[in-house]
Length: 128
Image (cartoon, rainbow, N blue to C red; front, side, top):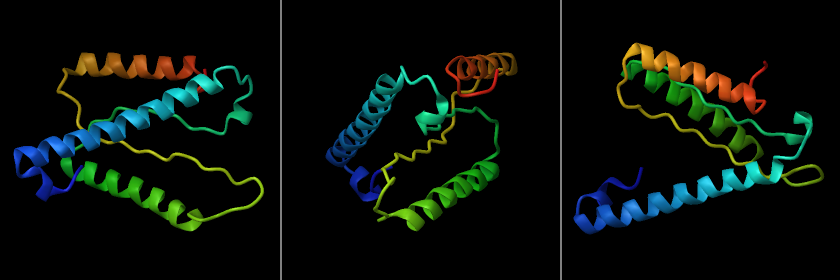
């Protein structure tokens, strides 16, 4: 998240913050635009998208293992198809966010997991 050298000075921290915030703002706008543009598509087969969110409890070592596995899958496919052109080829955004959440007690974590699953089923991301 930003170049470590750039975050040493107050000006560097500010510049890094501005760049990162703009990156995530644009990313958010792309996702919201996609959701608005595809809200009326009745058949999931025509949608060709995967939107998924999960919450999991991990140790630092498990986080590292998971982050490396996710990054490896993304890197493998990006490298394999990076400059592909031709009929039927279109660009896809591939995103991964894995970060620690604020600490909650177990009952709140379980409630949030049920809400996440319910919301995902509601928008058609999980089977009912």
